[in-house]
Amino acid sequence: MSNKITFADIKNSEEVKTYIKQADASLKVLGFTEHSFAHCSKCAIVAGDLLRDLGYSENEVELARIAAYMHDIGNVINRADHAQSGAVMAFRILDKMGMPYEDIAAVITAIGNHDEATAFPVNAVAAALIIADKTDVRRSRVRNRETIDSDIHDRVNYAVEETDLKIDKEKKSITLHLTIDTTISAVMDYFEIFMSRMKLCRKAAKFFGLEFKLNINGSALL
Image 1 (cartoon, one colour):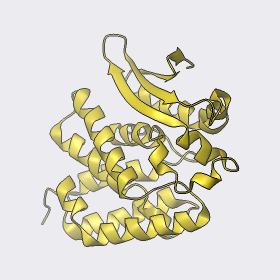
Image 2 (image 1 turned 180 degrees about the horizontal axis):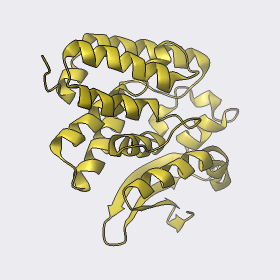
Image 3 (image 1 turned 90 degrees about the horizontal axis):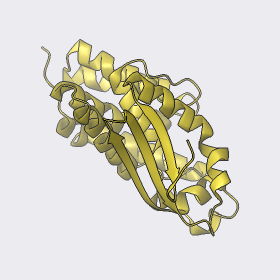
Image 4 (image 1 turned 30 degrees about the horizontal axis):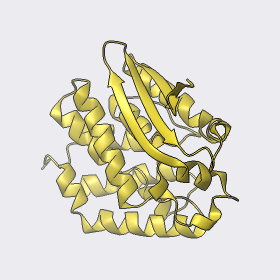
């Protein structure tokens, strides 16, 4: 029998918690930025709020939160192809919980389409997840202050002092506003690291009929 599985159900799942925790532990050893509960939770909030603000149904908002919260569990297997393995894992978890097939389909489609190498905003949940995931840039994601000189990914995250994602329905735009410390990281570093991510955000924004923009220290860069 199918049940309406909620975001709260997923957050309270010991199985999901275990996979997220172990996945992040593996990424820590590999030298990646934080991908634990802070990242998952922020992505869930941003993805859900985005669909809510754009007038999508409460069910679609809930599915976006669920997909965003679970999107990185595939890292528990391997970083390579983690979007696809994560989607398969999510299918097993959600099917076992009794989620309706159409809801499962929306969630696993989004998870399977969030990584830069193969991502595409194939539905609203996927588009919201892409934007939420790729715009999570913040100092607290850096695990080790000593790595910022040698690792550009850590440097660009650590330099961020404030981040804000804003939708302007009248101008049909969604803008990522970043305030960065340029003594830590040059603005050009963001283009080197984030260009592929920003292009993906553009595709996702276009799905909603919006234009994606990037603003750093008050200057429009995209």
